Length: 163
Image 1 (tube, one colour):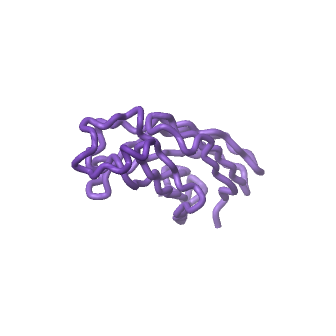
Image 2 (image 1 turned 90 degrees about the horizontal axis):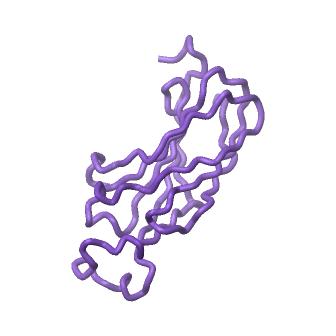
Protein backbone atom coordinates (compact mmCIF):
# COMPACT_ATOMS: atom_id res chain seq x y z
CA UNK A 1 0.00 0.00 0.00
CA UNK A 2 1.28 3.45 -0.91
CA UNK A 3 1.52 6.01 1.86
CA UNK A 4 1.51 8.83 -0.71
CA UNK A 5 -1.28 9.24 -3.26
CA UNK A 6 -1.12 12.00 -5.85
CA UNK A 7 -4.56 13.56 -6.12
CA UNK A 8 -3.96 16.31 -8.68
CA UNK A 9 -1.25 17.71 -10.90
CA UNK A 10 -1.76 20.80 -13.01
CA UNK A 11 0.68 22.62 -15.23
CA UNK A 12 0.30 26.30 -14.48
CA UNK A 13 1.86 27.64 -17.69
CA UNK A 14 0.61 25.48 -20.51
CA UNK A 15 1.02 26.01 -23.41
CA UNK A 16 4.18 28.11 -23.14
CA UNK A 17 7.25 29.26 -25.01
CA UNK A 18 9.82 26.49 -25.31
CA UNK A 19 12.29 28.45 -23.16
CA UNK A 20 9.82 29.10 -20.33
CA UNK A 21 10.21 27.07 -17.15
CA UNK A 22 7.82 24.23 -16.42
CA UNK A 23 5.58 25.05 -13.45
CA UNK A 24 3.64 22.20 -11.85
CA UNK A 25 1.19 22.40 -8.96
CA UNK A 26 1.26 19.03 -7.23
CA UNK A 27 -1.31 17.96 -4.64
CA UNK A 28 -0.92 14.69 -2.80
CA UNK A 29 -2.32 12.93 0.24
CA UNK A 30 -0.04 11.40 2.84
CA UNK A 31 -1.59 8.51 4.81
CA UNK A 32 1.12 8.36 7.50
CA UNK A 33 3.73 10.84 8.68
CA UNK A 34 6.98 10.39 6.77
CA UNK A 35 10.30 10.74 8.56
CA UNK A 36 12.23 11.71 5.42
CA UNK A 37 11.65 14.09 2.51
CA UNK A 38 10.09 13.11 -0.79
CA UNK A 39 12.34 13.83 -3.78
CA UNK A 40 10.58 15.14 -6.90
CA UNK A 41 12.37 15.24 -10.23
CA UNK A 42 11.52 16.45 -13.74
CA UNK A 43 13.31 14.85 -16.70
CA UNK A 44 13.07 15.97 -20.35
CA UNK A 45 13.52 13.17 -22.90
CA UNK A 46 15.70 14.74 -25.59
CA UNK A 47 15.57 11.80 -28.01
CA UNK A 48 13.53 8.62 -28.14
CA UNK A 49 16.54 6.93 -29.76
CA UNK A 50 19.17 7.62 -27.11
CA UNK A 51 18.67 8.26 -23.39
CA UNK A 52 22.02 10.08 -23.18
CA UNK A 53 20.08 13.14 -24.43
CA UNK A 54 17.73 13.05 -21.41
CA UNK A 55 18.06 16.10 -19.17
CA UNK A 56 17.22 16.33 -15.50
CA UNK A 57 15.60 19.77 -15.45
CA UNK A 58 15.34 20.09 -11.69
CA UNK A 59 14.86 18.24 -8.46
CA UNK A 60 13.35 19.32 -5.17
CA UNK A 61 12.93 17.85 -1.73
CA UNK A 62 9.56 18.19 0.04
CA UNK A 63 9.35 17.54 3.72
CA UNK A 64 8.72 16.95 6.46
CA UNK A 65 5.46 15.61 5.12
CA UNK A 66 2.55 15.62 7.57
CA UNK A 67 -0.49 13.36 7.38
CA UNK A 68 -3.21 14.79 5.17
CA UNK A 69 -3.40 16.76 1.96
CA UNK A 70 -0.23 18.59 0.90
CA UNK A 71 0.36 20.87 -2.07
CA UNK A 72 3.33 22.70 -3.56
CA UNK A 73 4.54 24.28 -6.79
CA UNK A 74 7.50 22.77 -8.57
CA UNK A 75 9.30 24.96 -11.10
CA UNK A 76 11.95 23.53 -13.40
CA UNK A 77 14.00 25.30 -16.06
CA UNK A 78 13.43 24.59 -19.75
CA UNK A 79 15.75 22.04 -21.34
CA UNK A 80 19.04 23.13 -22.83
CA UNK A 81 18.66 23.33 -26.61
CA UNK A 82 22.31 22.46 -27.11
CA UNK A 83 21.68 18.99 -25.66
CA UNK A 84 18.74 18.14 -27.96
CA UNK A 85 19.44 16.70 -31.42
CA UNK A 86 18.13 19.12 -34.09
CA UNK A 87 15.98 16.35 -35.60
CA UNK A 88 14.25 15.80 -32.24
CA UNK A 89 13.57 19.42 -31.31
CA UNK A 90 10.29 19.82 -33.18
CA UNK A 91 7.59 17.21 -32.73
CA UNK A 92 6.59 15.04 -29.80
CA UNK A 93 8.69 14.05 -26.81
CA UNK A 94 8.09 13.28 -23.14
CA UNK A 95 8.70 14.86 -19.75
CA UNK A 96 8.81 12.56 -16.72
CA UNK A 97 7.81 13.71 -13.26
CA UNK A 98 9.07 11.26 -10.65
CA UNK A 99 8.75 10.97 -6.89
CA UNK A 100 11.09 8.98 -4.64
CA UNK A 101 11.20 8.17 -0.96
CA UNK A 102 14.26 6.70 0.78
CA UNK A 103 15.99 6.61 -2.64
CA UNK A 104 13.18 4.48 -4.12
CA UNK A 105 11.09 5.79 -6.98
CA UNK A 106 7.44 5.16 -6.10
CA UNK A 107 5.70 6.94 -8.97
CA UNK A 108 6.60 8.09 -12.49
CA UNK A 109 4.22 10.29 -14.45
CA UNK A 110 4.93 10.77 -18.14
CA UNK A 111 3.46 13.57 -20.22
CA UNK A 112 3.69 13.91 -23.98
CA UNK A 113 5.04 17.32 -25.02
CA UNK A 114 4.41 18.71 -28.49
CA UNK A 115 6.86 21.39 -29.67
CA UNK A 116 6.20 23.37 -32.83
CA UNK A 117 6.65 26.81 -34.32
CA UNK A 118 4.07 29.42 -33.40
CA UNK A 119 3.16 30.48 -36.97
CA UNK A 120 1.45 28.55 -39.73
CA UNK A 121 4.21 29.50 -42.21
CA UNK A 122 6.94 27.95 -40.06
CA UNK A 123 4.83 24.90 -39.15
CA UNK A 124 4.19 24.20 -42.85
CA UNK A 125 7.91 23.84 -43.64
CA UNK A 126 9.30 20.36 -44.27
CA UNK A 127 12.06 19.28 -41.89
CA UNK A 128 14.84 20.02 -44.41
CA UNK A 129 13.37 23.53 -45.02
CA UNK A 130 13.21 24.58 -41.36
CA UNK A 131 15.51 27.34 -40.11
CA UNK A 132 18.89 26.07 -38.98
CA UNK A 133 19.61 26.96 -36.26
CA UNK A 134 15.99 26.96 -35.06
CA UNK A 135 14.28 30.26 -34.26
CA UNK A 136 14.06 29.53 -30.54
CA UNK A 137 11.82 32.47 -29.65
CA UNK A 138 9.21 31.13 -32.11
CA UNK A 139 9.04 27.63 -30.56
CA UNK A 140 6.04 26.76 -28.38
CA UNK A 141 5.44 23.66 -26.30
CA UNK A 142 2.16 22.12 -25.29
CA UNK A 143 2.15 19.48 -22.55
CA UNK A 144 -0.73 17.04 -23.03
CA UNK A 145 -1.58 17.15 -19.36
CA UNK A 146 -4.97 15.44 -19.55
CA UNK A 147 -3.48 12.08 -20.62
CA UNK A 148 -0.53 11.29 -18.35
CA UNK A 149 1.01 7.82 -18.18
CA UNK A 150 1.29 6.85 -14.53
CA UNK A 151 3.55 4.03 -13.34
CA UNK A 152 3.63 3.06 -9.67
CA UNK A 153 6.39 1.07 -8.02
CA UNK A 154 6.44 -0.98 -4.83
CA UNK A 155 8.21 0.94 -2.09
CA UNK A 156 9.45 0.20 1.37
CA UNK A 157 8.21 3.15 3.43
CA UNK A 158 10.37 2.61 6.51
CA UNK A 159 14.16 2.83 6.79
CA UNK A 160 14.53 -0.67 8.19
CA UNK A 161 12.77 -2.12 5.11
CA UNK A 162 14.46 0.08 2.50
CA UNK A 163 17.23 -1.40 0.35
